Each structure stands twice: as structure tokens, then as C-alpha cells.
Length: 319
Length: 319
Image (cartoon, rainbow over all chains, first blue to last red; front, top):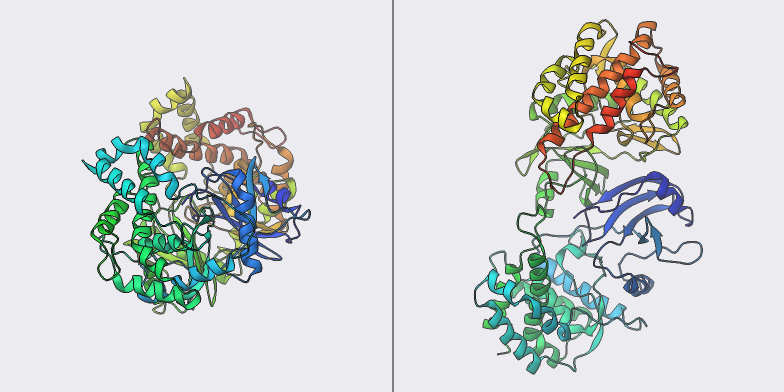
């Protein structure tokens, strides 16, 4: 929720000089996106989002992300289409940083998803999985199952500082994942960050998906596990079965899940909770006490892991 | 440049329920405005800016500011028209803070104004002065000439910390202002913060004025003095006579200045430089060393005061 890079009118004019997108009518920094600077741009030709890529997003991954967004838009999936400059380039440089122009998408994200929102969001995710089918780009999920042991290795003391004894519990989780993580489920492109703030609704219907900067190749059902964590828990940390069933029902409107995928959802969701816990713990550990900007609370995902260890009533267990 | 208040989709829906502005299509926090939270809202009925008033803006002043904006829009001046709810209220409450909905205005602000921009901006300011004529609201300029002595009183040590000997120089300025500050120039509503970031251009022509949250009753030429400081100095601190002459030429397209007003411009501009120096010094003094957010540099306006003490070549002097 910040704008890190300041773009002057003269810099904007120079940047747009290489595009066929008309002349600017309005330009405002917006508080959207994970760790990039985003600007809403209106020109005589339409509306766009200008993104300047800051930390975290690796420059070498950007052709994959932008290529995927272009592919999805070409399939008719409602995601922001990148705009090519006159030379055909999707990726440019602004203030020495990578930058891209994408089409503006209307829609509103929801803070507290209802059952109806979960149904729509599930359908939107399945549609994404199908629309990405055939996209030739590949990117390893660097925050996927194979990476968790290494991600956790330096964080044991931080975990225990957060909650005494937690490091041992997570090591036990990691040992169980090593034994039982599924490996033969259908694979494809996953969004990997399909959270409510990355999904737009229009009049209560699924409208669009944004922020593809974690997308990678992985087991498709893993994306559902991560999404269930984000969409189907209450603020008090409890699991909402009705919303989870709605999410799956919506998903299966577009893509039927195999019995193996359904059976794997509890372990996939538990693993996905660990993945978000690990990056939040890392950020929390790396932020000095007293800093003005506090990172997201890792305990939210610690609680979700605890729920998964108990098993999700009515949704299954993998113990 | 920040969004301080977070508005959920449910809060937005509840807020808009009292307005006839259609249903929301898009809603994004934007980095605009001095110290308020601003959101760009698109609905089925059009585009709006939702402002939640944070620090600095006093709640009791808001009816004046919103009334002025309504008056100016009714005169055809391009400033954001406040939108009344169904009960006719311009000022509402959101998350326990004052909030208002205003019409969206297209246009781009410029970082480094050219001579042509200054000509247009000068005309825009004179138009504002004329359009505000007849507005019945009154607000004392609490940052005007009468307030400077009191504002400076606690800041002597901070001034000397910034630049040794500066406190004495400012006390000497204050003594000269007490003797020579004009008091019989034409009065009216002044914007009092007519800086380049508060003026929008469309295709290089004056487009609109925003951010009326310093507006007050004062001598009209004082507004020109403050604007000349903001529009007609180089980044290296030197005065640009060509831009200043263009600003005045543009102003006089709409409103002729009297000989007394012209003669008073050097002292008014010097005083206006002191006013911005004082509030920046206050913010600088109140911000702990090492804070992540640094306030605006008071030295920028210290340098402008020094230029005014020397007199502005070709523009006059009041020594």
C-alpha cells in the first residue's frame, strides 16, 4: 500500500512517447499491489495502470509474468492485458526500474468474502487454470513445497520468539510434508497469491484477477489450498466450511477435481499456510522493532496451520 | 502522499447508500492531497474523489471549505464540486472521521512549470479570485501575517539549529513586516496553497484547481506572492523573472492589479516565503531524527527568503 517511485509529468510524457496510447488526461499514484508502485493513467485512448517494479519481483521473472498476462487476456480471461510499445516491447524502464503499462480493469475487491463471493472466486480460479493451459512459459515456484525447508532453516529462533516451541512443531510439519506431499496431481500455471485483494467483483459477480507476480508452475490443487486459507477463515481464526464448500463448488463449475485432488486438499492447504507463514515470519524477523511500517502478522497463518493440524471438520484431514 | 484510513467494500457500500451516485465499479486509494486520505471512486453514475479528513484540517473549518468548493463550481470555476447526500449534507462521517465526496477532475499537475504553465496558472488564480467574489463564508487566515510572530516564538532554537544566526535574521524580518506589511489592498478569498501540485493542466492549458484546505480571507495579492514563490524559482534557489512576469501577465488577463498591489508584491512574496518556512520548520522540528517519513525541507524556503531580502531583479524590492 504505497508508492515508492515518484514519476514527474515530464518523465511520464517521455515514457508514453514510445506508445500509441494517446496523450495523458490524468495520472495518480494508487495504493494497490504488493510491493510495486502503481499509477492510474487516463489518456485520450483509455485507462491504464502503470506499474514500476520495486523490491521482491525479480527482473528476470518479468517476461514470464507479462507474457502470462498477455496470454490470459488473449484467451478472454479478465486479467490486465499488458500494452506493447511501438517496438512490441511489454517491459520498459522508468527511473532506472523495470516498468510496464497494462489495461485498467474495473471492479472492487472484498474484505470479508461472503459465501456468494467464494462461489464466484472459486469459478474465477478454475477459469484461470484453464485459460493458462497452453501458455508456453515456465517458472519454478520458488516458494513451493521444495523450498520450505531451506526457507525455514534460518528462522527457528524467530519462530520460537513468536511462540515458544513453535520451531519444533514446524520441523515436525516439514517432516510430514516430506513424506506425504502429493506429487502426481494435475499441474499447470498457478496464481499462488489468489487472495481477496487480488480478485475484483462487479455487482457481486467475479470480475477480474490481478497481481500475477507469484504465478508459477505447480500442482493446480495447491492454488485451491492457498485460496481456501485466504477466503474461508473467520477473523477469529476458525475455518468456515460453508465458504470452503462454496469455493469448491464454484471451482468445479469450470473444472472438475479428481478424487486424488480432493483428497489432497487438506495437506495442500496446510502446506500453503506454512508457505505464507514462512514469508511473513521472514519479513517480521527482518523488520526492526519500532519500525513505522509493520509487516503482516505471521501469527494469522500460525493459527491456520494449527487448524489444519486438527483437520478441517467436514472438509477432511490428512493426519 | 499516503492513505491513512482504510475503507472496506462494506463501509463504502454503507457510505454510498445515502447518496444518489449509482453503484461502485472501482475504488482505489490514491496518493494525492496534503494530509488527507483520498480515494478514486468510479460508479455507474460517474467518477468521484472520496476524501477522509485526517490531521491538520480542523473539522469546524470543513463547512467553509466545502461551501467554497460548492460556490466555485456553481460559478463555473473548474474546482471539484462537493456532492450532497440525499439529505443535502456535504459533510459526512466515515470510520469516525469527517469525509466528503467530490466530483473527479481530469488533468495533470506539472513538476517543473514552464513559462507557458506560469501564464496559464496566473490566469487560473485570478479566475479563482473573481469566482470566489460574493461567497458569503469567512475564515481568518490562521497562517497569515498576524500569526507569524506567535508561530515563530517557540522555533528560535530550531531555526538556529538549521542555520546558525537564522533566528535573529527572522526576528529582523518580523520587525520589518510589522512596520511595512500592507493593509489596504483588495481583499477576498485566497487559495493560500496555490502550488504546482494543486493545479491541473489539460493539453498545457489551465485545467483545474484542487485542495482548498488552506483557503481563507486575506489580501488577494498575498496569494500571488505565495504562488510566485512556488512557481517561479529554479531548483537551485534562484528567481526566474521570466516565469514571474508570465504569471502576472496571465493573472492580469482576468484581473488587473492596482499600482499598490504591484508595489506590494515583493514584501508579500517575502512574507509568504516566511509562512511556508515557519510551518516546514515546525514540522521538521517536531519530527524525531531517524523517522522514516521526512518532512519537507525548510531550507528551500529559507533560501527564498534570502533571495527576497536581496530584492528580485526586475521584479522589485521593498527594502
